[in-house]
Length: 334
Image (cartoon, rainbow, N blue to C red):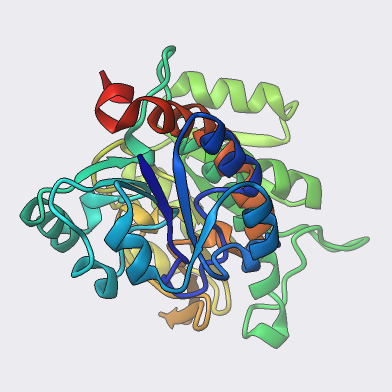
């Protein structure tokens, strides 16, 4: 079994599919690990560390794809990589195919054996490989929103925590799952007023209990979403429907009613986005203004903290990768 780790090509991506520690574990299981030169540098892992862990270094991504039985990545294959894929080759990475029909078609055409991180379920339910990235994205979303609310960034000049005698900013969080809960956590920590909307009353009760009533939970209805979005300084979209495109819950009419310079951060953009006016942005060009509102919709948001995100992701994927290293893809999935 040859496990290949190419350098990520997606704009601004800093994570890497395996750490040197996990490479060493794969080698102990009998796998041959091939890592592209420089693949881990943006996450703080040097080629020397990978070599000491037992990996062979490849001069290019093309060399990795040509030899690997299983390619372990972080983000979906980019256009330059599609032609490098081989029939029957294994692929373990985030794919988010619900919002990427072209990639789904390319994987089918090449008869790839692809396993998407976001679709792997745990024994007790839930999505153990998606969860750590959702937690990080949720925390980052409030941090990013606070930054783009600054006047120098074109924002409305609102400090989420307010000031003595000045009311704190209002954060509206759409969705009370893992990402939404962490967005609330950071917003509460900054001293903002926080409203969370979800269809699940149980989730909202849990959220209110977790934050001792500092988060106001509201059942998500079209009218409730419109009012909460229109009033917000920062809207965070954190709606997830596993394996499907995110539903649009915040429509353009609500966005038009927001104060100029307000900010929307749509974590759900990987699955198409849950705000009607969003479109994917990138780390190099992260915001676009629609109806006077700044929209941040970077699909690989956790890449902003590449080392933390790599460590969190690989600790979650470790058991699966080691099983594949020992038993092969078919054996691990049996």
